[in-house]
Image (cartoon, rainbow, N blue to C red):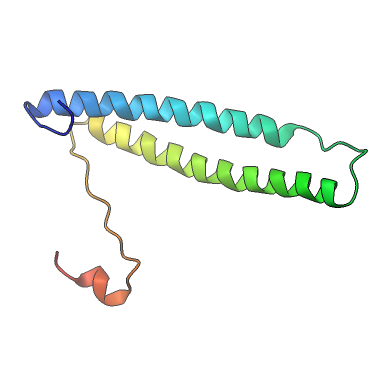
Length: 104
């Protein structure tokens, strides 16, 4: 059952399976973005159409960087789960200095 820990070993295995599946999916999507970035810009385009095409490539590049970071995080998660470690909750320190040191 989703979200319930019957047996820790079973939970880690299913979480590991999901993490591997997610990593593979992100890698596939990243490959698709890279293929889009590689496509040459049509030489016949000019003005706003060319600018839109270049802007699309810039956005795809930014998305690819984000996916690459996600892929690295997933690889680390898979390594940790493979070693039997639990997932840790991410802590959001966006609030500022005091929030970093508050005990929750």
